[in-house]
Length: 145
Image 1 (cartoon, rainbow, N blue to C red):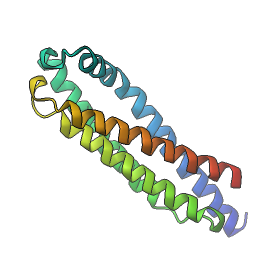
Image 2: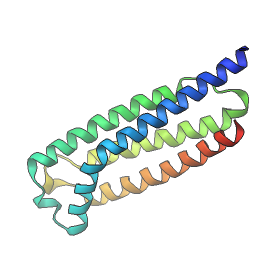
Image 3: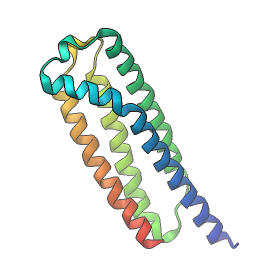
Image 4: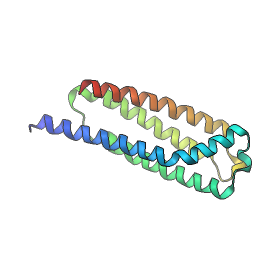
């Protein structure tokens, strides 16, 4: 295997590792997010169980830290020449995703009654937009491969 092929294999492995890690983390956090989203939508977030809320906040903090570590992994490899642009845009979209996750975590504050619903909703929209941009770049990388 020549040097360019080795670089491509490494790049591909990193992409797969980061995307699999991201998907696994999202699946792990989804039950907490869904419960909180349902309470917000029902207008009952202020009466959310305090222990569950504290656990959700802790899980979101851990998830955000995990996403930040995955961002570092994603940004680390030098992409093969034909993927440089898409890789840079993917890293930027992932960075925005991590920032939106951090904003969502910060919107929780310390107790259910202090949840900043507008910040939570804005963070959710920002996560969705960043995820869409990530998918576009992953699709480009896949087409170019």
